[in-house]
Amino acid sequence: MKPIYEDNTSPLREYDISLLITVIWRHLLLCFEKQDYIQNKKQIAWVERTQVMLTFIRQNYTKQISLTDIAKSAMVSNAECNRCFRNMLHITPYEYLIQYRLKVALELLSFSEWNITEISQKIGYNNVTHFIQTFRRKYGISPKQYRITKHNEEQY
Image 1: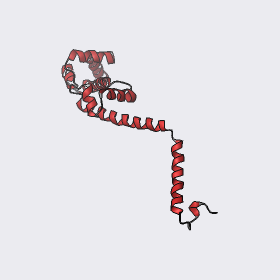
Image 2: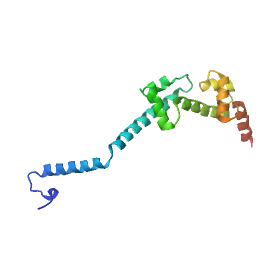
Image 3: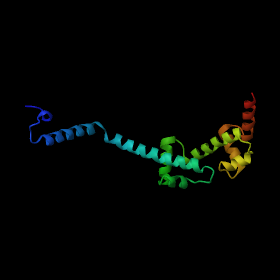
Image 4: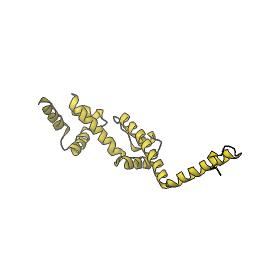
């Protein structure tokens, strides 16, 4: 007796092949654990949502934005917004916003002639004192000290 896929004369050949394909798919699906599939699907959703929210932050960091604004950008709840950031970046959306603003501040302090108050306003801080305190907490020096140090380094 010939194997099903070699028997070209059988009137049920197409059905036999279809059954074989089904059995192969069944074996493949059994090889993958259902939990892994669900985890990967969740992971993909978190990545996509987080990318949308990161883009929103980068485009709007100069404005006063809230957690709700960030969450709405990806059409998720505040809790899901926090969950995405925690799972993907291990920080909160607010912490990311602050880090991004401070990163931009470093560039502006290094390459612009704007004063500290102007830079503070351009990166979304309404209160220059709050900006200076946040900067000092993150980098251990004031924005003014950073600028002086940076300019001295460039001269050498």
